[in-house]
Length: 331
Image (cartoon, rainbow, N blue to C red; front, side):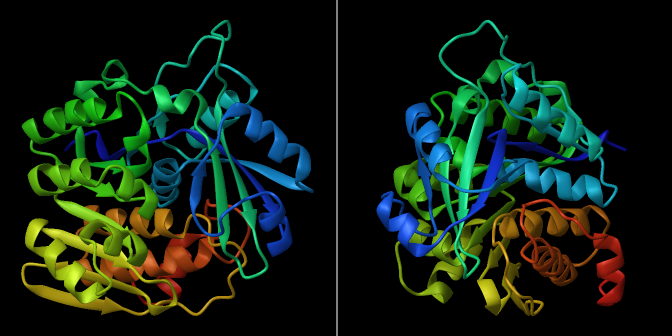
């Protein structure tokens, strides 16, 4: 038995969540519903303008790993933070979920960057607009990848946002080689349609050459395959990857593999904050696979977990996911 069921690699961030109206977005030049990269001065400026905020450990892949750990899965996470206040919060919160987090922190004396943070503005419709200062998370390098840890993973989970880092693709390549050489498998999430546009060629190479399981939402899938037809995009993805899992908001999710296709219904939920829906879908889906559940059931688990996380502020589960799975007859 391998030490870890899933090891995630991504942007180690602290989320700063605040409610905001449409006017605030317009007044501050924020495009609704996407992730925008910002620098430190912009992060400070926005923070000074938002109202009451809640700071919680986040980061897309970290949320996924936290969800798996919440379900009792054996997990680890790789992501870069600084030895500062937010870095300590991030490390404590992730370890408290039961995940292993051993990536060396950047020293306090290191100048120029701080622990990354994402200012997430949630509009009344539950949509989130993310303003991301990557900070130290941007500087994940191959040196931060422990080949033995990757070799001890049944699955590795790679966060698409990480493609924006200068050395991240090399770090991913090192992780993939170590994992696959030891019989492990590779999953990746596309993360954001604009991230896909910035790095489409690199994504496609990794999808075709290395990926066993592809996670995406509708917008990301359409962006990757440059079409307005979701069925066409799903078919093309399924021809390139063994397993495809694509979320489609209130329409649930699609899972494709081996020439078969399943549509999984969403769980009707009042949307309070859509942050983390895809992250928790992926976490529950991967947990389901490691427990031997079918792909259709894994998709069902993902939709249940996503419904829980969008019912409250924050991207980490607050209810007992296992109890929810049982309530819905999924396990």
